[in-house]
Each structure stands twice: as structure tokens, then as C-alpha cells.
View: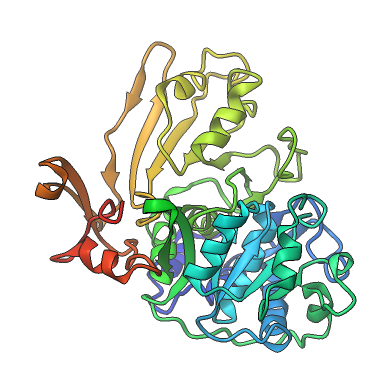
Length: 418
């Protein structure tokens, strides 16, 4: 069991960044299992599905070196990450950040017009593709990317390559394993999250290293579940709240268990037992309780949801529902509101579903964030939310005017571009 003093040092480490995070976690948790994947990631290098913190560090070092050497990745270059597998997408995103790139993860291929708009607005000229995308690409969008002039596509798996391509798996086999990550400032942009804007134009929300790390700094000491406890991670790889919640769980020493992206949620009990924590979003939470009408894992003590849950969904998690805990233990529900990814996990509320009623706090800012309501004449006197704090986004990558308009006297007004 890792002493709380070690976690305190991690939370207070001023040199901690998204680039050196895995190095710090490997020192702290070492051989403990960090990721349990549905299939091996680059099986020629690591044939097993359970990866320790040290192996995660080694894999991302190999991948970061390969991206610079083979994909010719430059610092600050935007790269599209296409994978429905949250575990694979996490490893690819962390490798890109280590190599100085800016990740743009998507869990599925969007429509061709929307995909073209994201590439154009983000100035994206490279992509990493994995997770079985090639077999399910009926619209032929990947072939469109391959034929796009000046565009470079790198498959993750060896079997998905064309004759003139090199996969990330093959490139990693030639890496030395000795890699020094880029030095990131807290304000360095490391990720873009595409969101719908006006007139069908995507808005690319910027996320900084400081924003993605802050929830882990603030909350990892408050997850008293112990080293190697399993966390069932059901959140699709989309948006800054996905990556921030994964970093939060790893910072607490939890093992992230990623089920397969399609089909029913199956959990095979490992050495650490059933999951004590579930990380999900509102749509996946509804899917989680749809079949049984209750939380299907009796041992779960904390459900973390990166969006607002409806009262009906929460009512199905009450202890009177069949399938919850036979010992009367209740599941604490922690909901976050990321304000359309402009402030990942910056506001939260706690809910506890009892047999007869529901105990729920209002949404509160995660310290040291501050939130206030303002009256805006441009919206006909309607109240708008303003927020300030370390997790707040600098703005939108492809709309400088909207970013400048949204920042007023040190407060971000996330609804301004909409």
C-alpha cells in the first residue's frame, strides 16, 4: 500500500506535467498493474493484456521515439487519434504528448464532411489508426485519408499496413527505449476536443497540461481504495474529461480495466477482485443499468460520471434495486460538469441514492475554481456561467475571436461561441 505522503508529493510536484506523468507514476507504483486491456497493445512487444505502470512507461517511450523518427512528428503538430478502444487511445495520446504533439482523439469516424472540417480547422496532417477501424470503414474514409495529398496515416497494428506503410508496432520494434520527454509548461496545449459550433463548423477546445492534471492533484488523495484496486473504465475516448478522469484514477493507484468497445460489458475477475470504481459518461451509465435495472457489480463503491445524470438513472442505482449490494452497502455517485469540455472535471456534485429518497449536493466548483452567474445583455438578460481556475481552457484553437470574446476580466464564458 502506497503511503499517503507519497501521493501528497505527487500532487504537489510543481514539475509534474502530462509528458512526465507516467514516469512519476512508475516510480510511485512500479510493478502494480496500471491497465487491463481487451486485447494486447502491439502484441509483438507486449503479448499480455495486463500492463504494469513500468511497462506503460516503457511502451509510451518506445512509441514517442517512433513517432518522431518515422512519422516525423514536430513539436506542436496536431495528430488525429482514431480508436474506439479507450485503453489503446490512452496509450497513443500519452505517447503523442510525450513526443511534443497535440492529440485529437476520436472514438469513431465521423461523416466525411465533418471529418474534412476537423482536419481543415485543426491544420491536421497526420493520423494514428487502430482499434479495428480498417475492418469497419464501410464509407471508405480511411482510404480518403490515405489518398489525401500531403497527409500521413500510420496504422497501429502490423496487419493493417499497405505495402508502402510502416506501422507503429514495427517502428517501436526499432526504438531504443531511451527517451526524454519534452518539457511542457503548465499552459502548454496538449489536446484538442472537437465540439459542434455554429453553422456546422467544429470548434476545437484546447486543453492544457495543467487542466488535465488538476483533478488528479485535487482528488487522488480522496480515493481510499488502495493500490491495484480495479476501476472499470467505460468512458469512450472523446473529450478532455475522458483523459482527465483516466489520469485521476491512475494517480490514485487504481488499475484501469477497459472492456471491449462493442457488445455487453464483461468483467473477468482478476487478482484484485471486482471493480470498486466505475468511470463512465451519462450515455454509458444508462447502458450500464439498462439490462438489469441496477448496478451489475455489487462491489462498486464509487461511480464517477463525467456528465449530469438524470433522476431516473440514479433511481436505478438505489440499494433496493435487485443486483446491488446484498450487504446494504451503497454506491456513492460523483458527477462532474466540464462545461462542454472547456473546464474538464472542474465542477462536481455528490449523490447517494437511499431506499426512499435521494441525497444530492448542488454542483460545486473543484477548488480553487470559482463559478458565477452573470447577466448578459447579448442573451436578452439570460444568466450565463463564467468560470476561472487551473482547469479552464485557453479557448478554441480555430477561433481566436471567440476565445478573446469569451475571456472577460479573467473569467471564461464557455457559452460565448455558441
